[in-house]
Amino acid sequence: MYVCVMNQHGDILVHRNIRTDQRRFLSLIEPYRDDLVVSVECIFTWYWLAYLCTREHITFVLGHALYMKAIHGGKVKNDKLDSQKIALLLKGGMLPQAYVYPADMRPTRDLLRRRMHLSRQRAHLIAHIQNTVHQYNLPALGVRLGKPTERGNVVECFPPGDTQAMVQLDLDLISYYDKQLARLEPQLVKQARTHDAQMHHLVGSIRGIGRILSLVLLYEIQDIDRFPTQGQFLTYARLVRCDKESAGKKVGKRNKKIGNSYLRWAFGEAAVLFMKGNPPAQQWLQKQASRHGKGKALAILSKKLGQTVYAMLKNNRCFDEARFMSHLN
Image 1 (spheres, helix red, strand yellow):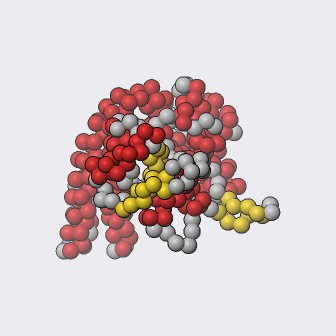
Image 2 (cartoon, rainbow, N blue to C red):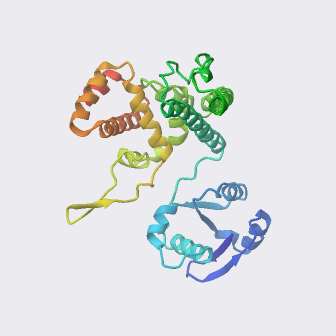
Image 3 (cartoon, one colour):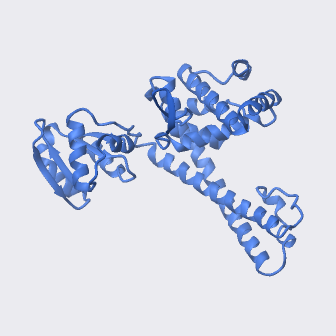
């Protein structure tokens, strides 16, 4: 890790590449600890330094990687230059800050994100079986592969030999993922009630949002008060457009990766699930789809749900579907 220590006058006191070790880092900054602020880029390796600074009572600031790149991007880039530029941005009060997620909730959020990854892998396996059906032009299976009780005779529907062996492999992996995902859910729900049971209850009051989706929203939002305005929350959730304009003309899009991809996925899922068994909402979706297309219609509904969740959490109120539908129409 490259460490750059700079004083208020811009003088570089230390600029050295050291081994990533807690004791070496503390030894290096020891002469300057009286009025020290530590800043690091928000790549995936910042946890240990945040823990260390909290334990040692050192002020810690997390820099937003994408915004920092936009400010200090140059032709030459390496760790030595980056460390100096981070120090300069911090000294000048120009460092774009990212949110330092609470340490006690980080492990649960990471476990939940890992569960989402495993769930997607399971979905890929189910899709592969369905694709194999089309590949061999076989009759529809007529079963729901997501249900363990309906998979009994699926292998026999495929040509014997290696094809059946491939499908059996997929089914075995799906069953394994089922066991692991089922094991994680009670633990995650228990942790959510420990961290913020009220918020978990409020988010779960929306039609279609079950236990897991409410957990995703809970742990990705964490604290609604960190978003002073609704616009900031929608931007963080990637629910607003990122058009780039010049002289009143659209010239493309930019910064699509800024924001929380997990939160964007959660609101997209919530929009689809809200439609299930909801004729008024389905009629509204059809009307919007005829104007904008189905994809954009769902994006509009996702944004409406994002606005509603923000208002619910700010006002500590449960979801009112009648009121939501009246504003939707």
